[in-house]
Length: 240
Image (cartoon, rainbow, N blue to C red):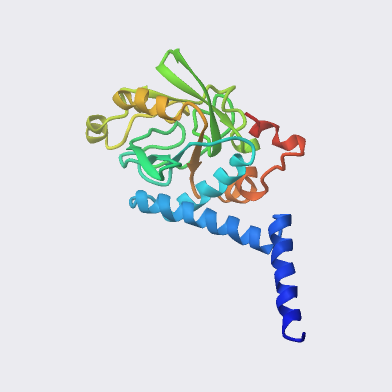
């Protein structure tokens, strides 16, 4: 009997953790799954900063609590504009669909991005987590709306018409002539030739994560610091 009791107690503990789904086992499993995804994506994109990929998957987990996500786009604005710094990942297959150049806003910087804003008329890029929010054809052709989820850092994206679109100033030829890419009014603009296939790939069930090592954003962004719970009004922006 003295031998069987500890075994029985351990068995009960395991069953309890499995049934509740909120114990240490479940939490460890979630953390392991998150790490595995970040490792797989970093392996698929060896040119990317693994820390940026890890942050992007953290934000992705927040969004995934409220909606299905099939693609993750990561923009690393800490890289120079002449370097391909936009990756699009196919999440079910954990592969890279696109790795391309992307422009930043006119007042964000020259070759390097330095300044970011959520203010209308700033002509700056915004940081943070976005979801794609429908396509349209406008002044810049076929375009994809972005809806910001990080409060004061990007929740004016729709009002500012921050969209993904193609632009002639995003090209190797322009970069070689000017020493940088051309700049948008705050939109993450891509090459004209890649705009349509890229937009079509991410227009539904997609997250876009725009990174820069900004201390305020890293500390206070809702999708990184304190993901809103589905039971609160704070999660309304995350709803499909």
